[in-house]
Length: 177
Ligand SMILES: Cc1cc2nc3c(=O)[nH]c(=O)nc-3n(C[C@H](O)[C@H](O)[C@H](O)COP(=O)(O)O)c2cc1C
Image (cartoon, rainbow, N blue to C red; front, top):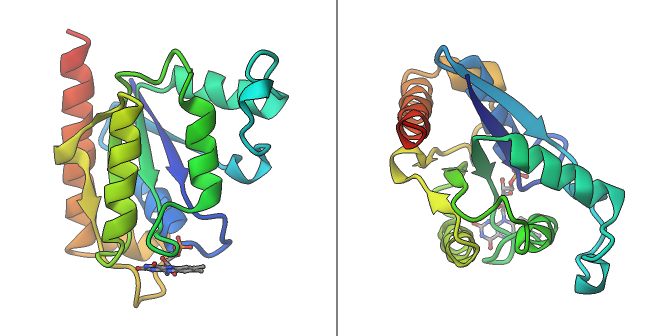
């Protein structure tokens, strides 16, 4: 079983990025499980002084990241950048031993969000994550009030997500051969 951990970069209740990640669950091919980490809003502000004795929420984050075979991020753009709460989570993971080499698929709910995507790639590359291009997709949820169900059954988005998940699974299986 390939274990994916999905993390949305938005704290918003009706977040399009979170809904996109919820839709992936419905489209999971056999042999993949998707868990969701929804704790980014509870993480304290990153402070290198705290790394020696990290807060409980950070220990939990690192443990959950460590258990995942691959990460699935979907992050919005705020003021042409990465939302602070999501970047804060990444800052906690910079010195995490498990993070370098971690396979990451980037889902993007807005074709307009190009600056945040570019910034996110730069940050993840700096952290030595492995971005899996064939598992990274952009859909347009900006103008429609979608539900996870309607995304999963959409004739364009559904197959796009399913194909990305399949490609992610193949890459994760091949790396452990
Ligand atoms: C404070 C703020 C700043 C934003 N800045 C941008 C931006 O620079 N570029 C952009 O394309 N969208 C921007 N947006 C729009 C959001 O990316 C858009 O509302 C997106 O749907 C938010 O993601 P969510 O639905 O997952 O919460 C901004 C929204 C907010 C609230």
